[in-house]
Length: 307
Image 1 (cartoon, rainbow, N blue to C red):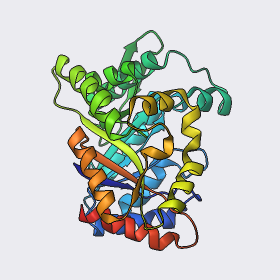
Image 2 (image 1 turned 45 degrees about the vertical axis):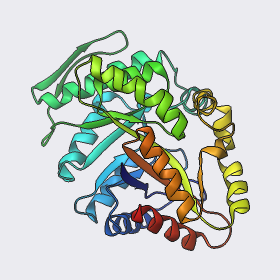
Image 3 (image 1 turned 90 degrees about the horizontal axis):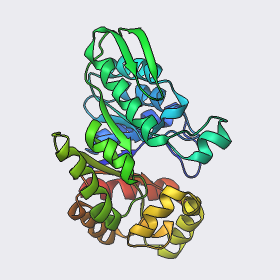
Image 4 (image 1 turned 30 degrees about the vertical axis):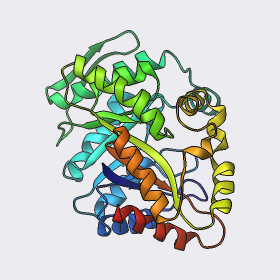
């Protein structure tokens, strides 16, 4: 199981690019295999953040977790991704997903139409942009394209799809390199995510997919304080249908239960359970509370690096 880490703050405050650069340097120095940035409404642009992180790192994989597809035309996102991939020497992993109905419709005023079909066609178009033919033509149910497309340095894009439902996992297994199953615990990974995506990939004749998950985590001796903070931070997931379903299919009845909280021994024991469940990419989203936030974050990073 590879260990990656978020380098852009999401829970307590919004990072600036200097903080992203500093955390990227730190992550690579500690030996993490990958560093990730989210795409959330109160945070920095994901691809710009990855570019900043790439300028101060040498070999670490850099990824987005995840960019909402409805907000970007597939050719526009492909052009950005190919350009950035070339600048990073191929280190980019493009994490995309349809997001949530409330985000797309209420926050952005766009129709959240047929998300599984939308994502399927979106990924198929992304794949066609890697062919370097100078032209992309596509005649789908939702997208009809006939456009020049030639981006210097374009090549194979590593794409992970934010997927936790059966239709999305089908698309992820058939067409992408794997999934990012945000806020899924080890029970949901083992019983739902891994069997579904592996079956889809096998049927499509594709290699075994990556199975990643974004997991909030903190190493601390103050269990009560951390659990209270987790309850406050992550209760919103309990009101979102897709995440609510994952909570119901997992081992816990509250979103806070998905978080990894404890001392070094307890945290690494829980991480091993994720590895045993079939997770290939553990994407740690450190969270902190109280006054000693940097001490808490450093302790968490060192524990993850020792795993």
